[in-house]
Length: 90
Image (cartoon, rainbow, N blue to C red; front, side):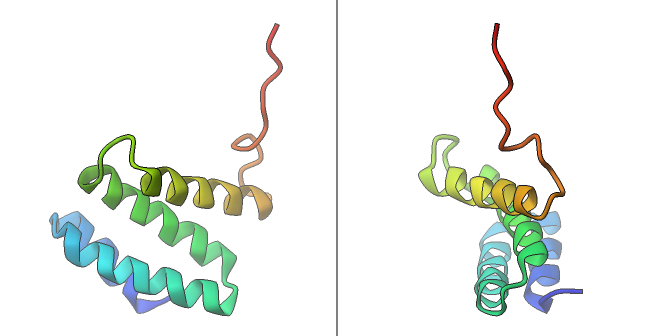
């Protein structure tokens, strides 16, 4: 069900141990990118976004980048289409 580092990182996030969570989640992302596991990549990006939303400033470029990666990956998989769609404005 994905890299062990993802699960350990998720548990550390729940425990509030954000630095350790971030390290494990980054290792999971590296492995997922290496093997081309896009669904896992999206899931881990989402978890890392949760960590960064607590530890990084709200206007952090990295936070925005990780969240955008998650959204684009989910959209590419057909899981979430409205994330990248631009609504028509009157």
